[in-house]
Image 1 (cartoon, helix red, strand yellow):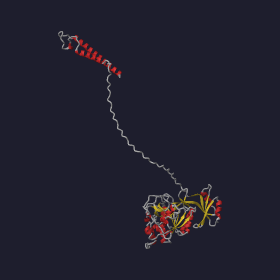
Image 2 (cartoon, one colour):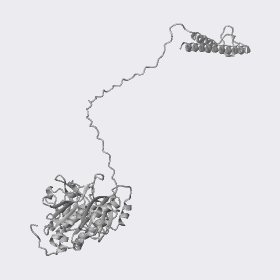
Image 3 (cartoon, helix red, strand yellow):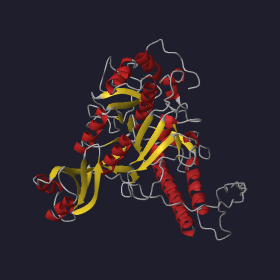
Image 4 (spheres, one colour):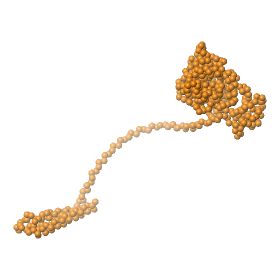
Length: 501
C-alpha cells in the first residue's frame, strides 16, 4: 500500500514540472513578440495590451502557471506525518436466519413380522397316457388259470393281478416288466401268442374337475333345468344310479340316506372320501342345502379313483375301471355317471358296449381339455351320452372339449356342491354337467322304466333350448337340457302331477 502511495506522489511532481516548463516556453514566446513590437507607452505606465508589447516583464498568466506548477510540486512531496486514512467499503449487514426447530416426533417401534418364505410354485407335470411298464392281457376263453403264470414266464413279466370281468366274459391279467423294453415291443410279442386274445396298455384316466371361477348365485342350475316343475312329476324314486368316481362322504348331511351301495375298485385299503365324488353325489341325489336333481334315486358309489402321489390329483387305470363297471352292472345300475376322461380304450369300450346292450344308460363328461383337444373317452363312444357345460348366462365353459358327438349341455360352472368335513363350496367342469343330466335321466326312468337309451337321447335333444349356432353344433350339442320339458316330451302333456314324490 505504501509503494502505491509513493508512485502516486512521484507522478504528481512530474506533472507539476511539466506544467512549469510549459509556462516558461509560453513566456519565451511572449518575450520574442515583445521585441518585435515597440513599446509605445510612457515609461512607468502599464501596457494595456501585454500581448502586443509594452516592456519585457513577466505577464500575469505566466506567473500564475509558474505558481501552480510549484504548488503542485510542493503538495506532491511525501509527508511523513500520519498515514492517510484507508477508506473501507461499507460492511454488508448479514441478516441472521431464524432457524425453526423441527419438532421430532418419537419413532414408533413397529414390530416387523418375519417374511414367510414362499413355497416354490409347483410346475404341472405332464401326465402320460398310460402306465409305461404295465400291460393288460385278455386271456383266451379256453385257457386255464395256470396260463397266467406261464405267459409271465415266457415273456419275462411279473403277474400283478388277475380278474374275471363278467361284462367281457373273460379274464383280464395285469402284467408288469422292469427291464428296458418299450411297451410297443412287449405288446407286439404278446399279440402273437395263441393264449392271448387281446392286449393293450393300462391307460390312465382323470377326473374332470375344472378350475374355480367367480361365484354366482347358489344353485342357479335348478332354475336353468326346470327342476321345480320337474319334481312335481318325478324325483327319481327307486332308480339305481352308478357313479364311478372317487370315494364319497356318505356322512355328509346332504347325502343322508342317498348312498345305497358302495364298492372299492381300487382295493388299496385306503377307501378315503374325496371332494370330487362327494360333489357329484350331491348334484345327482342331494337333499337339504344342496338340492339334487333326483333326490329319491339310489346311488351306487363305486370308488375307482385315488389320489396319485406323484401327480397330486385323482386318477385311475383301465384295470380299475373294468372292475368298477363290472360291479355296477352286476348290481343292476340303470344309469352310469362317468365324470372322467381318458384315451381310446378297447377293453373299456367293449365293457361299456355290453352294459349298453343290456339296457344301461351311459352318461359321460365331454372333458376339460379345451377347444383344440381331441375327443375324450368314454364320452366320444357312439353309445355314450356326451355332456358339455355352460354357465349361469348360458355361455360355454371355456375349457370344455368340442365335437359333433356332444348330446346336450347342462350347468357346469360355479355349481353349489357339498364338500368334505360337512362343508359346502362351488365346483366347475363338464363332470358337474354330466351329473346334472344323469339326474334328469333318473327322473325320466321313473316315469318310463322301460325307456331305451335312444328314447332318452331323443327326449333330451328334442326339448333342449338351442344355444350357440342354430341347430346341433360342436359346442353345445342340441342345447341346454330341460328336465321338465324332457318329461313332457317323453310322457306327454296328460301326465298327472305326482304329489309327495
